Structures are given as C-alpha cells and as structure tokens.
Length: 471
Image 1 (spheres, rainbow, N blue to C red):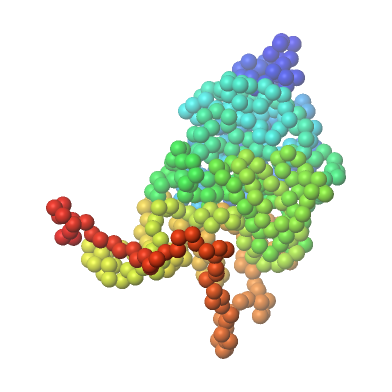
Image 2: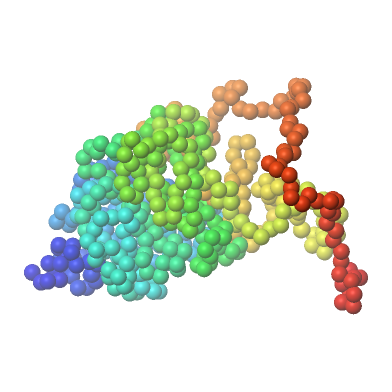
C-alpha cells in the first residue's frame, strides 16, 4: 500500500487531489447527479447504508450516494448555475450540481463519508464542512489546511460523521465572491440510535437563509454589497417563489435553518409556539429549552425548531425584519406619506404618461401596481392570497396545517377553508367613541434653557446671480 493510499484510507492527511489517489481506491468517480428544477423534492428514503428518517429540503433536494466497501460516497460539482428565484425571475449564480444552494447531504452518525469535489468554476475553490468534528486537513480552508482546488481538478475529502446534528458546507476560498454568488449547502447527520435529546418527528424541513443584491433587469449578484441586499431569500428563492411547508394536523414538526447571510434573522411562526431543540453545536439540553414564537438566527448559526402543528390553517412563517419580506427593494426612496401629489402628477404625466406616484399612502399600493419593470425583475410584493394581495416578498412562506393531509404527503393542499364565523369581517353597526391618549407626556425635569419662542423652519430659494432665483 502506498503512502498516498494509506493516508487516503485513514482520512488523516486532509483533502488530496483525486489524481494522487490510486485508481484501485477510486475505481471510478460516482456519477454527479444534477438538479435544475426549483421545486421541493420528496425526501430521499435511504436504500443503502444505515436507515434514517430523511429531511425535506425546501425548494431543494438531497444528494444521492453510493456505498463503496462500507464508505458512503458523494460527488459535488462546483459550477455556475442558473437559479429561478421566483417565477419569471432568474439569477446567474454559482452553486453545486446544478443549483444554489447545493443539494443537502444526509448521513448517519458513525458513517465514513467520502466526498469528491470537482471544480468547474473559473477560479480555485474549497469546501469547509461547517460545524463538523474531523481531521484538521479535511477542514477545507484554502492555504491553511489544504491547497485550493484549481479549475478542472477534483479533490476528495474523507472523514467519519462523528456527531449527530445539522451543519452546513461552503467555500473557504475567495469567500466574499463565492458565498455572495450562492455557494453553500446543508448537511444533516442523523443519530445512529435513539438519542435522549433528539426526538423523532413526523416532518423534518431544512433550508438556508441567504441574500443577494441583483439590480432590476440584471442577472448576476453584486458581490461587493455588505448589508443593503435587495433579495432576502430562503434557499435562493424569494416569496412567492418559496414553497409552503405542508403538514398534517397533530404532526410533530422540525424546521432546521442555517444562516449564511451578512445579518441576523428573527424567524417568526404564527399560530404556534416552538422550542429551539438544537444548534450547529448539537442538541439543546432539555433544561435550557423554553417556548418561543420568534427565534433569532445569527450569522453563521443554525437553529432547529420543533412544535406540534395542532392548529389548522395557513400560518405565516417569516423573518420579522420588515425589509427582509420585500423584493427588489430600493433603500434610498424618500418618505412621501401625506404628500399630495395630484397637481405635480398632472404636470409630470404630460412629459411621462406612465408616471406613477410611489409611497403616497405607504407601500401597500405598490403590491397591486401594474408598473412596467425591466425584464427579469422580481416584483416587490406579488403574492396573491385568497383575500387579495399578501403584500409580502423575500423571506416569507406559509405553514399549511390540515386535518386531512395524509401522513408523508407533502403536496400543497390549497387554501384553508375557514369554518363559518371564524374570519374577521367589516363591522357596520354603531361604535362607542374609542379611548385615546390625550397627553403628550412630560419631561422628567425642567429644561436648563427652555425655548423662548416657537421655531418655524422656513425654506428659501437661493437668490443672486446664479439664475436659480428665477426657478
């Protein structure tokens, strides 16, 4: 046995080029499996290796594997991809195996895992296995634990999945570019046996929180953006392109979320309380759990939520940062609430017949405007519900709880049929005068120098020889 062969089998030498590993060890690379459809695929029930209860990746899929002498082998291909982020809107991203994010990898605690990574990008890359316990040389940090995977080359990573939990994978090479372009994926290690801190659940969903800055009419993200993203997404999809989470009433539901954006996300579920049962550090001790309806997921973190879906209905599920539930968001639009545009609009329409007032009464009207937009632009708010515009975009979806949903059935059951008398309606009878606060409040102490007179702000046009005084 050569030294290269021995190091490969022991998994102790780090990520090495596949060309350096003997042909007997490789036999042949596993055929890469590609997926381009943006639909939520059915869970991949294991037919080889140890059994487990599979997850469902929201608007994604699980990567198939092959068993080779007791080792679970996967093949990831890093490559440019086209991702449909919402119906009619596509982005040119980088990802794995035809999609961004890449496919979810599912293994079982104790599995020996071998992952071949082929680079079809125009620059070098690597893969860091976020949260995993593994040999240092398999950690995937270019320049520190391995050389970069050059374009056209294949590297192989091998290690034992040592602890159950939810993890992520992403490059540690030119991160600012590669992660901003969508290179990331989910990893789930299922427990090998019954675990005192990991309950069995009926539905197990997972997805990544990610964000992009794609200008209206463009296709490629701006990689230099730090915070002012205009597309806040789950698994590189924006509402109404995000699938609903469809469950049976009474199901115990688990939702695993990893955050690879540049900011935190307070994730909020309507109609139910949940507990945080795990992080990427492992299962949460039961004594440390408490009921919540909103859980903050910080940058680089994973949060695992669990609840019993015992309330029928279509329940909103979203990030509670209001700008994160919008699409194609402009951040420098002035506030025009209360401004009467009627006269100026008449004048502008003589020059620009299609001119439309924006924000005069708030932002809700914009969800129903038929404003012409550049090709390949996600509308700001375009979700249509049973009662009209939902006025949401971005990080928003619906948990659909149905009594008649069959066990293991993930199909969308349609809109909830509300029992008679259970929907808020207009009140037309008389009303008593509502109580209102009449006090503006008082300071905690007198001002040191109280104002001697009312101050009125006046605006004057510039005068002088510039000519502006004649405007």
